[in-house]
Length: 294
Image (cartoon, rainbow, N blue to C red; front, side, top):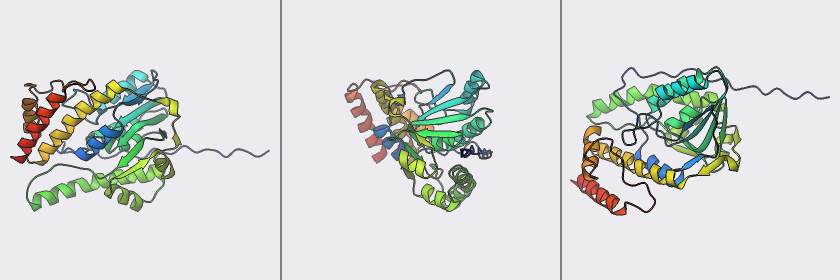
């Protein structure tokens, strides 16, 4: 009788460096946020258990919702789960890649197996977090997106060169993690990162970024969550657009809060009910357009 071949578990890659200077934030660019809002907002798991960590948010503290995925929160959840296998359900456009590095490092230290299930998107920093899984499953209509660290910066050519040099080792470290997980040459990974590459479920499996497809009945679509995701996501994207025009993040947040009539930082975004708040959003967009043009 023939013996079944042994299936060797992939070794988790080593820890990634955490930057000494946390004043720099490498974020998901507005175009990625917009694309996530169109295609993945509201995608959730159909069922969860007491050993499940859900990541249906941006990576890093989120000013607009008061939420966000952080290493501190993930550590607390892992302690509550204890010495058991863990499932991590992911639908995230990414966010602060340095917080993503910290979350990746926390997950890779868990003593039991970790199964990552990509319900919608694992983009940018969230794709890095997914690489901490011993097994990665992905929906057929889901996506993994990888790219280089993206920042908003200002200054002269010397400042720009300094920022580029600062980011290079982190891009290289991420490429090494992707290469270790997929078995692909680092050169291929670097090209995909340079091109800001989106991979469907089938492509992610073919290239080694995932191991298997999720069953169709594992994923649900929540219309209320979709509306809420999109409402907060628009504020995130608009903030980054204003920062790109030369404002600081504090100035951009204050301007958006003033225009939408919130008055206080962290106030709730416009109504998340589908079809509601159209006049409010129209006024917000008109005000922001005027701000950018001026």
